[in-house]
Length: 431
Image (cartoon, rainbow, N blue to C red; front, side, top):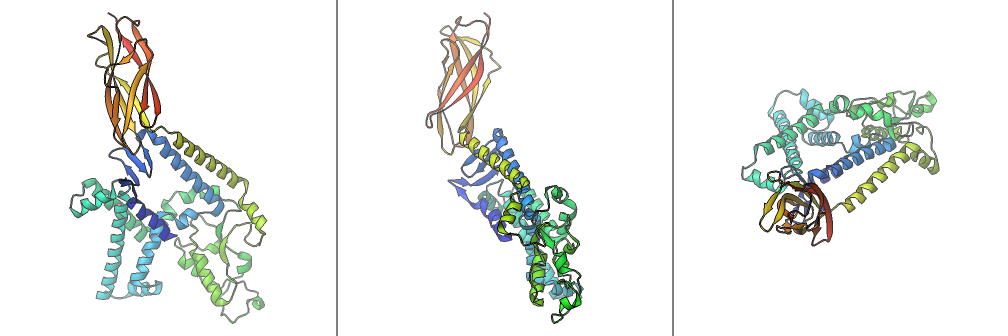
């Protein structure tokens, strides 16, 4: 699972959609590209809904499977696991690392320590570079780095995210989960007795005691736990799962693997520590009973709301116009008399093209007798671009009373046959 998340994280910035990056949150141009979707600042509601859907999905998965996110997808857990893997490859297993730490200073010790931190820092800088690639075209970043043209802000964010990764995954590790992450503090409100968690089978494991493989535990009245403490040693947050459910547990399952390996060596049935629910730890329910426990009211409510949000979001996106128009009046000239005995008002039309191809738009206006567009009526906007166009409207002088009159601009996309209407006013000044 660790490698799956990293393939997604490091791979997405390199995907292309047409002639651009597939996923790019371009803050400088205020364009958010999500594959075929282009969002603008006025589309912030869509990003908000995406975050709400992600949060609700997290609540749903937590209710069903506990801290699934923490154990298998959280960047802190994932990067800590990667850093530990690098450490094992360079310095050896736990026993070898202890011997290396206790050894006197030597060329071999300095080399291994230097190599470990060099790999850590290199990986962290690549992570910072990839993170920035979601906000600045990653191919442009490569060229900027190779030609030593990287700007101060790009340098800052690569170093900031890189050294944050280096510090959190290399040194703080589980301390982030125990003391800094707020999720562990409020996760308990989403748990119930039917939430899947890492748990210890007390009835089977107690009383615990050390023994050899040849000892008959039943004759001595002992449980299956041999009190080897391997589950504690491998736990990234340093808890003893045998003491029951604790807020620090991130459900990574390392204690499950460690215990099963010991049970296998002892010739006992695996699963003394396993993923199970508090209500079902000592039971072997039927498939129907298990399904009933999973599809409980809380899960069904979360699922219904999540599905409703996703469907509403999809429908809203499908009905979203391919262009938007903002109309502003020229406040420098409220109204003016022009040759030909006509009264003129000037407006600015900000047209935003949210498609991948250049679009041509036709302007018309209605609301007053004889109202006509005196300026150019046809405008072209490049793909994913926004432009301001001046538009003049005229009526015959004296054909309307003094004051403000409501009018309506009609903007037609010539290529897509879509229409957008925008309200404004036409001001007739007193003579």
